[in-house]
Image 1 (cartoon, rainbow, N blue to C red):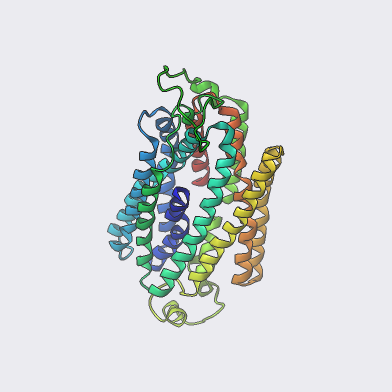
Image 2 (cartoon, rainbow, N blue to C red):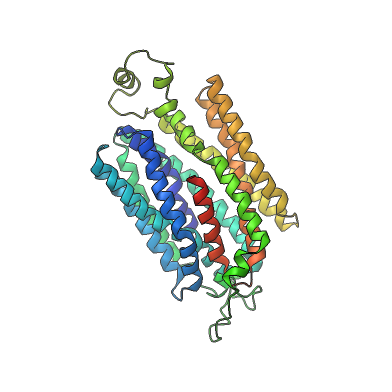
Length: 398
């Protein structure tokens, strides 16, 4: 339930936020700048956050709860942003940056909590289960956000209250995750010595001195980690801005709107938007179910793909073939997206490209498996995860 609630905080609601800003009259450049600032904060902190999660003596579940609450509160800024003037932009830039700080704790903290509670032997299995539940949460999130946005249209700000509900849910359920062995949560101890009746790790090292972690140089200069990071960088570069183009096209706003391509209406933009929406909002009401369907389509494929990858790796299949597939699927999706745009194939065909995009996320789970195989026993599990995320963040904002 914790993974389910955390998935609700981001995926289903985040896809509406950029479109909401465009609807307030923001330029595409300003929206992209807000994303870049958020990305800069995110990648600047990832390595530091990973190191904090590794070294902390505090309960990592507290980090999860605090980060969830901060993300939920940041979503409420839509109620004070009413336009596209400098004050509104400053509010969005500052709050999204603070939100990025909170988000930077979610992944590493949850990963460390999972490893501490279930140990390296069950890490792959629990990662798969967590991803399956997260994808299911994303589907529910997309559906809920679409229903609320549709019925409250044009006052779609109301849907941004939903993250607060799911933050409370995450905080409530996170306390039921066993704390396990905190040292195992940072990658110490490659095997589990004792489990309780529920199969969770029992901390048998709490009275022992903390082992010495591998040096930063040893883990960061490991050729396997370096090559894995390089592959990630090129993949992220290939993905850059594809999501914004896709969402703009479905929402019928921005450069790729039919207003700008002249397909539907030949008069001025104000008359066109009045014809489309019946009000002054820029995002068409009809775009709401399209955006929700697109998000859900990808998640359905991710659920099926993640289950398959988890099953096959448990049966002894290697990680590398799936990781290569993860890298190769994205160019196929981009080609299909460009084909849809070039041929004006329509929204249904555009949404269908998300089925292909979902495979990228499904196969990408082996990245965590491969990193864990390399780092178990080093004591630097989360800082390396943060380092890779930093490099990916730099690539995404390039």
